[in-house]
Image 1 (tube, rainbow, N blue to C red):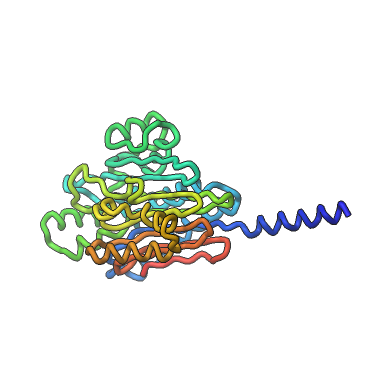
Image 2: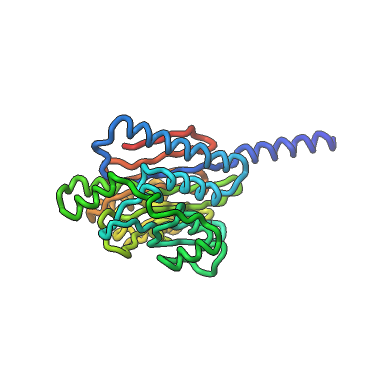
Amino acid sequence: MIIRSFLILLSMSFTLHSEENFGIVVHGGAGVMSGLSEKAQQEIHKNIQETISEAYAILEGGGSSLDAVEHAVSMLEDSPLFNAGRGSVYNSDEVQEMDASIMDGKDRLTGAIASVSIIKNPIKLARKVAEETKHVLLVGEGAERFAKDVGVEIVDKDYFHHEERYQRVLNSKKQISKSMQSSDKIGTVGAVALDRNGNIAAATSTGGMTNKMPGRVGDSPIIGSGTWAQNGVCGVSSTGHGEFFIKYQVAREVCVRIEYLNQTLSDSAESIISELNALEAKGGLIAIDHMGKISTPFNTKGMIRGSQTNKTELKSYIY
């Protein structure tokens, strides 16, 4: 009888464990996707899928959602395909200024950096701000000095040089091509994840807007606008016209409507993006809730994105 009871309890434990929800969703920015060659699309899909696969393996192995989103975003920062890290666009002074933020929904541990130019992986520095300072946001030279103090990798500015994007800022300054300028809205990267313990985390990283004013900061490093994570509710990473996402606190608003209006994740996320569209504010977001459900609405012609959960296969999309 005792043995039988033990086996029943063991079976129940296994069933509960096997039913744990976990997963990750990433994005590579929303914007004008026309003109992407077949080869470029294949490279994007390959990069997104490799990123998801590695981050999902962290979750599957019992790792934290915070580790998963940091790893995912750092991989995207290492790729010149996206407007973050190595692929960051140029400001009006023809230099890159990068922003990033990360948040743990378990205890609202939060870190962000802005206007840095020599940090190989801004998202790694954002996490250091969260874990090794009493602050939330560090900017510019102060953030870079802190990076040196804590051993975050510093690189020469030539590491970030991207000839195509350099030509875009030159053309943008000459106001040669509006279509070329709009295509630069592609790129901001982000990730949100739910781990086996029910913890939600979110992370976002960007090079901002082509030809932006030096010192301009968008929504990506602003907690509640570009990034939000809240256990028991949802996690969000945004991409798009940053000024609007700041004004309307888009990332947190998704969770607010779930928590206080009892909306579903998809209803909340889709309604917010629809409202932004009415304001002629372009962009999108990725979100995951506490049950592992995913939503990826956007009001642009495309948004690079992909996901994998314990209940859904790895998939990636551009349009």
